[in-house]
Length: 365
Ligand SMILES: *Cc1c(COP(=O)(O)O)cnc(C)c1O
Image (cartoon, rainbow, N blue to C red; front, side):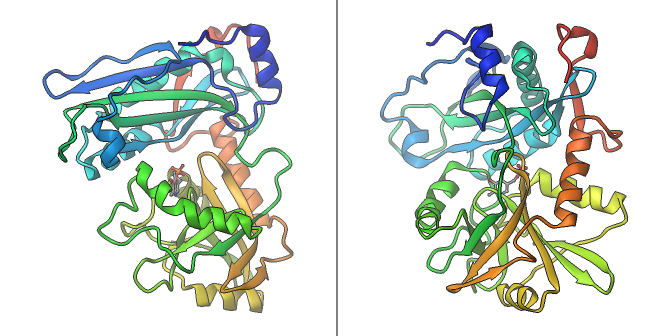
């Protein structure tokens, strides 16, 4: 068990948080046992998880997680973004892996307790947040293959810049040619640990070849675009004079990103044409060559909205637009961050207040 960092150390971290370099030194913990059900959440100092080497979660991969953020508004108050939806998704991921499903209400309560305890760790800058990483893992020692009868949910907290940092450059992305991430009926929609392990080899090879990320294609024909290893993908096309936004549909092989869903909703609010539809990698290549596909961007809680500037397709490198961030990408990012920091009204009920302005010890954004 380590001592939570003190105030001077905290102030130094908050001046330049980076992405998840320093935890707050606390976790929230909720346990489930087949005999007693869910425990009440409690906040405790960061500590090792003691596990028997025969623990089910380690051998058979019953492990799922979430990533969500708490933001500070201009008046100093602190709000969780779409916490209930993250809780619902964690429960769906758990169900797919035959794990205990935490009620979303309990999930939100555990997250809120941790954010309230670590309120002083929530940075105030635009785009900055307290990033929460809830992990749910099977903790029963048992070597026979069956669902665990014990689980632990542990929630980690980190002050964070968006994960590509302040001076980020557009991503270079390449299609996966040898491997696939998911097939229908598999676990592609679950935020489960094994999906990331399965993609790491290809992602590491892509990075060695000078790319930041892999664009996964559908697992059967390898013709349709799906998503990146940790983010969903959007395309912007010129349709006459008007831009048109598309993103692959959630058919069971991609994670149902809440950032993706928020951007589709915000686009509709703003009268931007947007659709969930399949696009083949050939159509992407044609669109980039002809210039009709003007922007490509990725989105997720950690990175928010990130432009893709270069796309490798079968060994050919194509520049997206002029290789820099396009106007739709920038506009959607600001629309989302404006809601998250409560600069514009929360008309969809996405924010849950954890710390009110008069409770925050005088901190302002
Ligand atoms: C988490 C994740 C996303 C993005 O989901 P958000 O809810 O927007 O954070 C997209 N794809 C994968 C594979 C992910 O793990």
